[in-house]
Amino acid sequence: MLAALFNGVLPIVAISFIGYACGKLKVFDFGSAIILNKFVMFVAMPVLGFKLLSDASLFDVPIQLLLGYLISETVVYFITFLVARRIFLVDVKEAFLLGLATALTNHVLFILPISEILIGSNATLPIVALISMDGLLIFSGTIIAMDIMSSPNRGWKPTVTKIISNPPILGMLAGLFYGMSGLQVLPNFGIFLSNISATASPVLLFALGVILSIKRDEVVASLSSLIVGVKLILHPIIAYIIFIFPLALPIDLAKPALMVAAAPCGVMSFMLAINYGVKVDNIARVIFLSSLLSLLTISFVSTI
Image (cartoon, rainbow, N blue to C red; front, side, top):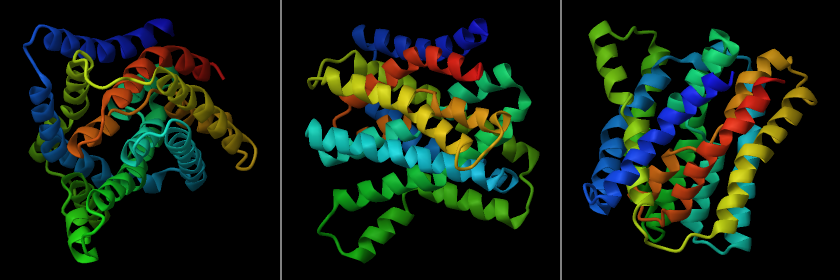
């Protein structure tokens, strides 16, 4: 089991370490990280969103599992937001993105391959469904909030236009409608989607390493530590309570979602921080630290 976890964690951490080394060696700078992030935001993420939502796997998973997990991640989202905003007095946009970091995880690159090794192929469908739900509701909802806050004095028509023309949202909406149409993705087009979408997380993790190598704004260590604790400890506890008691789900059915809850903070919050001009230092730190420490939480959840 430990070998499987190390094999899942180390390649992810290694990508950020390479980015960190390239930053320290001045091969890549902050401007380079911005360009990499722009590629993900405008190319890789829309394609990934289309690919995930076109599968329409949301409808093949028990609604109780999706609803229970949605409640758990919504709770930790707003706990993180309130702690960051009220106690540590961070900017409202940064507080939203720190909340997003605790609600979402690095599903595709991190938890999906690890869960398949630890609990088998039965984990794939529930996790893909959770990814689709998170993208459609939590991620898109955060983008909408960021667009509204970025231009508070703009009229509702320009705001709505900007929201629906946002590349990741466009990709997810197109994928959702395509999936509901019942049409099959052509094999060659499917290869294209897979190749492009597979670049999203690795490129962001590399850019994150570059950012971590650059000393910019002061990092609040206590805030970072608290948020990592919310994601890796509080989130799986809340999810477990919801799944086992009110919903009475069998543990084998709930385990894939519990592993997602115990996984590290999602890298997509880092992408949005750069895109919307939000301070990235705390966000980058919690993603990196939670990726290292999730080795312990995922291994514990897998034994339940």
